[in-house]
Amino acid sequence: MNPNTRAKSPLITIAIPTYNRLEILSNTLALLAKQDGFYDDDVEIVISDNCSPIDPTPMLREFEKSHGRPVVIHRNIANEGIDGNIHRVADLASGYYILFMSDDDILLPGTLRRMKILVRENPDLLFCFMNCYPFRECFDPLKMAPPIIKIDQTLVTQSNDRFVETIGIWSTFVSAFFVERLAWINIQDRTRFIGTDIYLTHVLFRLLSEGSQRIKVVTAEPLIAARDAFTGSFRIVHAFGFNFMRLLLEDAPLLGFSKRTMRAIKLNVMHKSLPTMILMIRLGPQPRALIFQEFQLLLRYTWWEPVAWLRMLPLMILPISALRILGRLRRTLRSHIFKGE
Image (cartoon, rainbow, N blue to C red; front, side):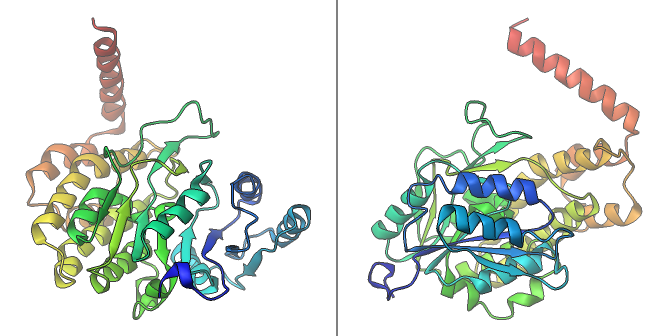
């Protein structure tokens, strides 16, 4: 079905899973309401609250009243975990496309209109990865870090391997997902991936496998501002060190992806992403050593790669005091380099 000739129903559902961030959610919605196209009839807003201690429904009803546009509000009777709530909000959507959005991320000005144009120009669009700027603490449009995907021009491709190699580990990033709803919800047995912490990525790889000849897009232009923060510590290892690696090395080749491409993504994650995540655990708000189970998970799919011993293992075993000294030396060295000394 061509989305441009669809029956009278939303073109885009903005689907927001949320939990226990009432003030942040309120600020996110206030910024969302400034989007060009927010009040159009072909845009639907769906919010699924994951049984937060404070029910956001009164705030959401007030938002509806003050902005004069309906919001589909759902509240889980029990906490279903982040994977379960993402699954839930997708099932609640009725738009031709779902624009997934974390409750603490921000659509940059013009994004909604840009996505409508993209759909009109690509009627066979299956999935768009919306590039983003990361930010920390308070959002300041004048102080943006470089985009997470660094490409010179927007990628439009039918190649699954080229698409996933371009986005790499960011295939786990919820707010980048813009996907045809029916194709998404028709993936068989989606619920079996709930609890992996990369539910989205599992479903995405199967979506791509089933729609291998359809159009996939990665935008060069950032359309999202994303809060640069991970929550939890063990779950970082569980999600990225183990389940993401297992998906790349075991599941993806069976779904038709190139083993060579999957290994390239794996090595990139080991070189750039996992060391940073390990340091977040070791030197985070509550610094600690890794436990034995975390060592097992991190090394299960990596131990035979030299980069594991050169980039990961020292960060896993060095004392916290040594990591702090090395961090200070690195910052000092970089400062001298930037000053030209």
